[in-house]
Every structure is written in structure tokens, then in C-alpha cells.
Image (cartoon, rainbow, N blue to C red; front, side, top):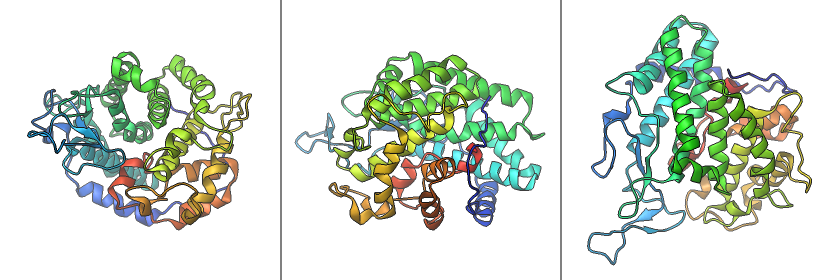
Length: 371
């Protein structure tokens, strides 16, 4: 079971009740979405199998059929199939805002609608999503799916927190709650044993970090203490190795979107500290023998999210103006470490971005549910 830590040192005026209730009303009226609502003719899977295309892959202009696709890093192909991504993300958004409204008001109709979204998306025989990502981020002419695609379910991390909060509602029956736990246990098992999952786990960039954010959250939710401990140790002895002496992450600063990816990897490293810290093993305070730590990562990125004009690397090839956006790490690190400048930034930014790249890269829509 997920434990909600109450170790933050200051209480900021950041909980935008009016906006949350507006979003919850939208979610009440929104259709219940399913992975089976749409499909791609290029998918090698069936109607219950999640499918997406690699973002930065394009038809080869020198080939009559464009196959195999070629890689243009940082340049998103607008013709790629993103329907399942959008459905999953919108389901997550509906569930977290309905859950937030339920927590604010204790009105069961919010919980009832949230549970309906969860039940139909994950459990109902006609509409469930299969608990694997074998066909995620496929590349036409090259592969039917890749380990890299596992990053697509990063948005489900918010969902397990919502489920735990909804478990206090009369609308969350034992059958649905148990069914959801089984779904996430099966998905976590697939992540940890499938070749795609093993490849992603061993990535030495933001993909490896995001794998462990998901593994940690899903293991906490499904009471898998062994995997929780594994994630905690891998954060210290594996993921922090990606950091350099100045706190930056060179696998991200070397990309064609160095600003976006540097914020993204820091956000997810912070998420791991939020998820995995405990009284006798506090990752917020942990420092490796060679001086690497989450505090150093925050020291690096904070000046540049406060003032993008000071960014010392090349600007991102696309969507540079969309960042910084309101991101969970600002709240988690601001509260836990007392970094008021990050809390002030969080409050000053618009409550949500309408840039597709930013929305895709913001895993935590409601950090309050984590706290």
C-alpha cells in the first residue's frame, strides 16, 4: 500500500480549488474512454493491445513507400499514431481531477465517475487494456514495438495514487480495487521480465529513470516490498550515475531538446525521492561517494527554470517556448527541501499547458495526491 508522507516543511498557497473543481466538472461530463475505441492498421496487436509510434521517426524520402523509417532526433512526426497515448492520458486526467474533487467535497458522485473510468479502462472484458506494452513506440519497417515505449505509461503513476484515495469511497468496491491491484501487478511483472522491459530498465538516460518511477509506484501500490527496495537501491547506485559533477545529466543536455529533457529527467528523479524515501533511508538527503545527489540536480536546473534566458546550452529544436511548465518536482522539492523559489515558480506558472509536448512530458497532474 502507498504511504503518503507528511514530511514537507511549509504549506504553500498552491491548491487551486476553483481550477480543480472546473476540471472535475469537465471530467464528470467527459465520455468514458477505452483503449478499444480506436486502433491503427499498422499495429501487430489486437484491439486490447496498446499501440504507439516512435516520436522521432519519419518516412524515408528516398524510398517509394518510405520504409524503413529514418530517425530525426527531437523532431516529432505529426502523422504518427498517438490515439492510445491521448486516450490513456485523458483517462488519467479525468480520474485524478474527479478524485481530487471527491477529496475536497466528499461527494460520492465524483468517486462514482472516477471508478467507472477505471473499471472500464482496466477491467471490463469488452474494453480493458491488456497489461503489457509489447507494441509501444513501434517503428514502421523496423519493429513492432520497443522497450523505449514503456515510457508511455508514465502517466499511470498518478492513477495508482488516485485509486488509493478512492478506496475510502463506497463506490470503490472490493472487487474493483482487487482487480486494479491485479492489473498493476501483472503489468509490473511484465515490465520486470519481458525483454522490452529489461532493455528499458537498463537505459542510462531518462528512459531508465522513468522505468523506475513506474516500477516504484506500481510496486508500492501492489505491496511488492522486494521491488520497492530494489528501486531504492538502483536509484542510489544506478540512476545517480547519470549525473555529472555540476548536477546536470549529459545524456539529456546532449540531445536536440536539452532544456526539455533536463527538466524532465530531474522531475522524475525527484519523483523517485518522493516515492521511495523513508525515515531510515531518505533519498532527499542521500549523496553518493562521489558527491552526486538530488540536491545537486536541483541546484543545476533551478536557475534555468526560473529564467529560461540563462540556459547555457542550445535551445530545443522544437517546443522550447513551452517550458518551463508547472511540474511536480517544483512542489515535491519545494515542500520537502524548503525551496521556496520552486514553490513560487509553481504558483506563478499556468495551471496547465496547452502545448502537446509539455502535456506529454508532465507525468504528475495532481501532486497533492502524492502527498
